[in-house]
Length: 267
Image 1 (cartoon, helix red, strand yellow):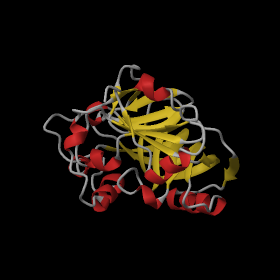
Image 2: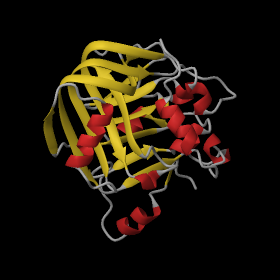
Image 3: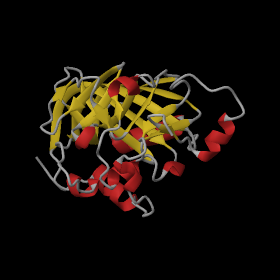
Image 4: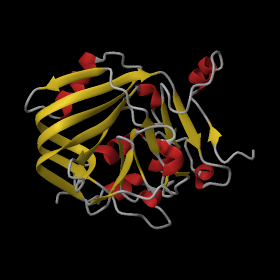
């Protein structure tokens, strides 16, 4: 094929989409780059530029070429949380090996109680939006008593699997910080493709700190959720990319659980 990227929607979604006109980029759905299992296996080479990815959304999370930090796309602006916890705006030419984005349009808004933590937030969203087989994008803006986050420094080849990298991940505790949680709740059927359940990143209002969220306690906060996602589009790297050589047959659920929630290293 001569196209730069291959499109691989989920099979059931592709069959449904064939029965109606093609949507505008990112409209009504989520667009992602590659798959989470490829990232877990060490496929860290970036394949899509931020400029290209921005066409498909103004809200999202992911990482960068060589696993160089945590990505946050908020209000149309990309931010990179580096391995030392600092934040910058990467150039549009920078690339990503894995990311999920959407055009965020909140249809649910609710003030949250003081003292809310991550498990309580997940339970509250599940009660408000019980359609477990639907995607949900959400953000929580407010003041946080503390947020426990992590980021990872850029990796060098030969790349180690993600679970090995995160066993020595830099972790930071932010105290008394205002900011925004940016996340997705994905259905269980995306196992191997994306992160089933909840996946959150954090960005401070002063744009000086953030990262992948491990835990938090909110003081005052507001939840906004966008639940109108009826398809997932996966942009696979072009032929010849490292993605093609990754063994995607193993069940990497245990690796994902450890990589996403590993609390072993303390700052």
